[in-house]
Length: 271
Image (cartoon, rainbow, N blue to C red; front, side):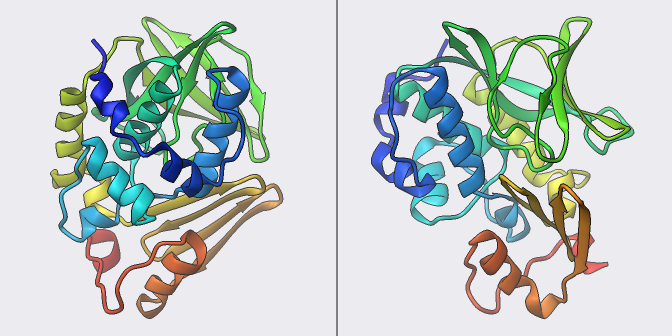
């Protein structure tokens, strides 16, 4: 079962394309998928500001467009990938939405709480994911085991693990799993449940920490609580951010405008 055609029909495609600065072809091809995916991740930041401001995270397409496109905000995985899936469907791509269990920077077993998509192309199936706040996909990845794809900061690839697929990266001698998923289709209500946990549960990473990220062809800029990180091929530079400068950093580094005097609150910032 796929979302109704009305979901994609309500998409303001021109506004989305302007938001990501895309002016290329719009055919349902691998080249277009690659180009749209890269333009999205380089233009719309990953962020959880609304969670820390006590605002609900709404996943209907109208709300996601209003926030990520018209208000020029970012969001987290459910928002990014809901929007991107609607764009792809409007353009004629065939896709299935999936859910993953995040392993990145976790020593325990977390919930299935990350949205991604499986896109069917003549060349085969590809994983598309424009909404991971760490070392996620910059371009779609063929659903092929053991085929590493080199990037500026690492090599990323997939492996099989029982009935699951695992996305993993290698930077030098350091290997890390990012997330694990199966190919079972998930529906909008499944993401509503996961979104409720992610945005409200006392133990959720996004309830307890400010997390903002924006990749670029040269690396990645991140903000985790008061630590600003610049990830480049020659290493990582970390800078402490004073509370008084937080709104300036969000605006200057990530293009996120919050009203003067806005206060973000969470355990990671308040400690």
